[in-house]
Length: 359
View 1 (cartoon, one colour):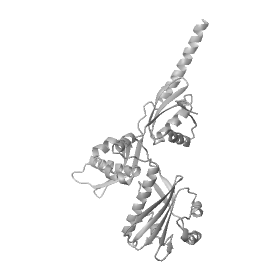
View 2 (view 1 turned 180 degrees about the vertical axis):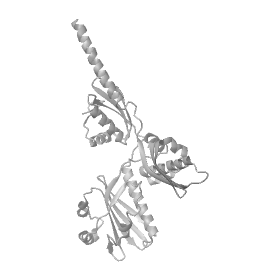
View 3 (view 1 turned 60 degrees about the vertical axis):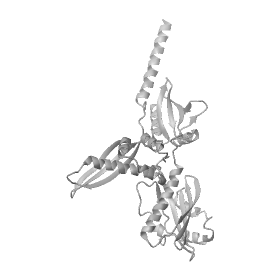
View 4 (view 1 turned 90 degrees about the vertical axis):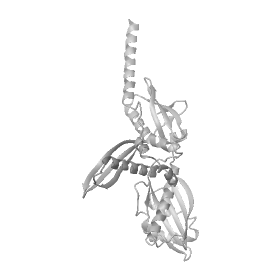
């Protein structure tokens, strides 16, 4: 009888842990749907005519949303490959869409559309084209443009600087970099002016530190006739780089040419930032981690963090027992990169054994 009683207790205990584990599976992510890229506020307008077709307008919205997404996650030299993407291919990668607003004004139809793209499908498409996407991570930085006229040895920094005046006039919603221009400051002007002879080696820290931003781009424009040599000191996410550029035959009195020059420079800086955040989708590292399944809140937080991580291609629970859930994770990067990513979410992971343990 004692044996039977112990057996019954053990059986009920087993059932308890089984139900607990099943609850964790059912209320977590047994089969993870791919994350999405969301592009909001695509605006389209068209005359309301006899052959008006709302479906065609929505499809045009898909194309515009796709192009905007590609401008966010791919480098400028890859755009020509992506321009050949067919409408049917784009539609196959659309996860969901919603009409945010539509109206008729003076026989013109206006539509505002939100489109979400299946992230896995997007990554697979880019991988087939041999394009590495980038994490669309926004960055705010201090930008200091300095013009040095080598003919007159004149220096222009603030309101007398054409790049300073025009830099933030044509912002695009697909741009990841947001530029903070320094306010006019006589002290800063004199500091730069007094160091003009060694401007290429000047560190600018005294000016940058005023803005409580760690990231910056210092662009020094050496102008001689219609040739502009540009020395760029780029510091983004603790990575420093010197980049030399040349603008030839530019008329600094022509607004269109200035706008084109600024657009070209911004594209170069965006490409540099995207390269720092590039995802090698061809690298698929398979990891196994375990987490105590007695804490549903902790499990939910872990899954939410995994979903937020662009470098994670997929994850799912592949088994469980009365103590732990075991996740299989496909990661587009190295083990060290994964650990660093998880550390940013304040996770401590024990890596002694083949199955890593979330503490």
